[in-house]
Length: 372
Image 1 (cartoon, helix red, strand yellow):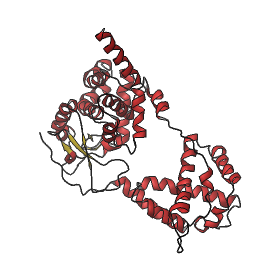
Image 2 (image 1 turned 60 degrees about the horizontal axis):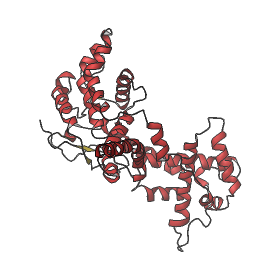
Image 3 (image 1 turned 180 degrees about the vertical axis):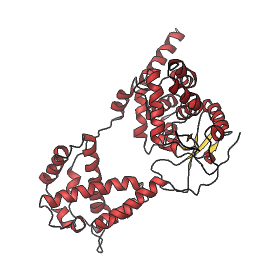
Image 4 (image 1 turned 135 degrees about the vertical axis):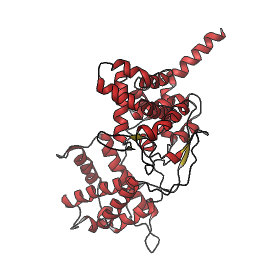
């Protein structure tokens, strides 16, 4: 079976929704924020820019509430009011974020909100110019704010140890979905019926992630035309890529090919999939006469169901991606791993260097013993 890829004309729905929200919110912002958004739009996704806007809304609202701005609305906040902010004001805002009654923000959230402010202030003071070629912002108080990294690769790796699949467990988990789960649930007729209907599809999804490292959102958005089975290739909308006419080619390993072929033979008949449905992975919900594209939540719940019975209760869809990445990194360098996973920076990929430290040290010991 062979599926060719056609240049997609379909719109990324979530990006369209976020862009629409962005357009709705922008008129309520000062002109210099709108200018900053235009500058950032080619590089950042609409969802990221929407988060920036929410952070600026909260900050400008706080400035007005504290009397640090005389503006009657956020749109009327001036550059001069940002220029004369003092260090104690920024400290007070940080304190507000961590202690406000509506629910204190986590350390990670506070760092992100301050980081988005730093991006705006940096643009206004270092990049944007007035008609006389002077910076729009003459003084940048946010440059004095030190934002500590909250996600160090080594710390993230430490949290993941023991919570991902390793070595032979990758194949064992696929086998468990196909056969082992039914043995464990033999007295539960409802669970057995659902499993018999969906086991090939479920094993295919797990195998695909464990052999490609796709994100769950990327799996959900896959269409039938994105699959080139013979060349072990998928065409994927990568996170953060704003070009909605281009899908990134992503290879999957040989191990996933059989599960994909088996599932594709069942996709239309078993799930009563109409020809108009382009989604690769289909669910037939109770009461529905025909199948439709699986949702992100359904895939997450499905993996957690099997993981719990498999004896890995902490295993999630994203940890399947971590499992693949750790295994892949052992056989490739950090740059190939970064490319395969679609990371924006090798800093994120460093997680797998720390995760494989123990595996590599054990391999060295084995080689030493073999050579003695």
